[in-house]
Picture 1 (tube, one colour):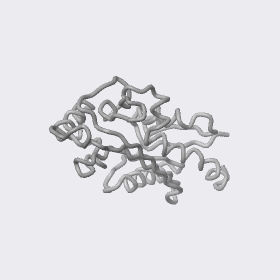
Picture 2 (picture 1 turned 90 degrees about the vertical axis):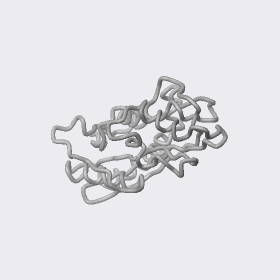
Picture 3 (picture 1 turned 120 degrees about the vertical axis):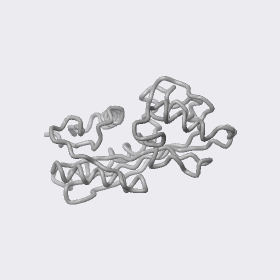
Picture 4 (picture 1 turned 135 degrees about the vertical axis):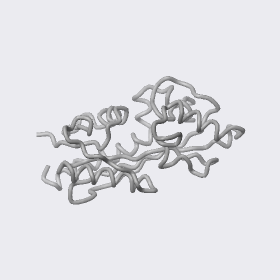
Length: 203
């Protein structure tokens, strides 16, 4: 019988990526948007790890089940690591993807392409009701482009150039992006450890 894993998110893009990357495991993946009484989650930490744990633990304690949360974002060297943990709220609470990209490009106006180094960071936290079971991190290095390119992905993908592919994340197909993305790398580590975690818990 498959173990149920609750994703502490309603972000359909993240859910799709995580389901794809965990395909083939004996795990039933659901998320907050599919629960009748979904808990309200907060992000009050000042690191990706703290926010991921906060969301995952709150979800696990509210549901009594294993819960997985990620906190991820973009860190740009020329901006001192911003937007960082504020990546989704960088242009305001209700900002659209275009709003986020527009603000980022404004902040980098005048910065040469060779000085636009950046990285996406993802931290995953798996929690049971009694506490955190494990934590994994993935990173991918890139460059912020001068203008958006590509119609795929989400968030800052249209302006994040992945140098080995010479494409932005938004120009790459989903499988190619998942193979190298920050979330893909963190989930690869998680996927490798999950069978042992479930076995130790009697699952």
